[in-house]
Length: 295
Figure 1 (cartoon, one colour):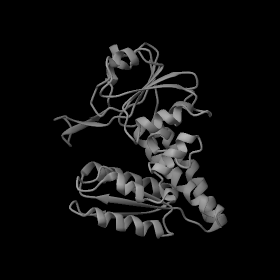
Figure 2: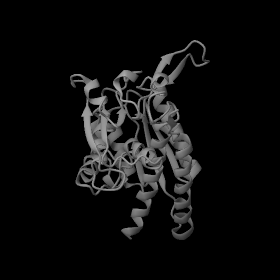
Figure 3: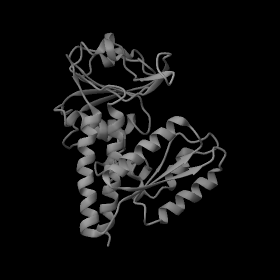
Figure 4: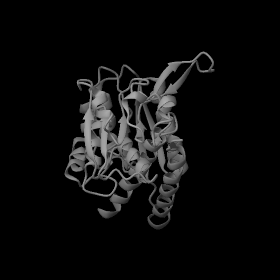
């Protein structure tokens, strides 16, 4: 039976470590880490994500505040808020919950977050530092994937990792992270995407497959070699009349049929998702710690 990589349990372990660091900052330096979350519009999924991040902050002792703007807000209004938060010393981290409404250019907003407060790690400055091998902040989901592997005894060094998906927040930075010359990296990475021909030709040869496609059950058992490790980043809502909510969450892989053939796999929910939030609060505390170095 495959090893279930429990992100919920591991994220609790990491949050416990972060809580200890937060307590040290408060006790020794009278400094409380702060995180500002910007939520534009009324997307239910985004609201849940922001609420969960707030709960994690409360648990580890981080001060957090949510700044809500209506769906029809202008790009200028979002930029004004971001600039205010850049100057607000109460906040060491700023996250703008994505996606944003169509009238707002996400890239422009991200570029206006101060790199020192970009705890999502997606500002061009921070992505560039990651590419150089000297990261300030590692994006939460790639960092969470790496920790799930390493802390469960699956060092990716020397392994062939196939990442299905090339987004700017998962696929691309994860590929960069796993090819670093450092512990927890040193993998040989192939990035596949919507224009990849014969995807199975790549996944079938992979030691580790990371699915970040955004399509339910896109990766099936016949696409994998026995004994591989499967990391499912996807989270998709599918109708389920038996549930009170009317839906259930599933990932990008066919979990039930892959489970018997793989060495290890992440569940959805309870796999990568909780790890992303754990790495966010860790980045926020690290941002606060760096302010002490500049004093």
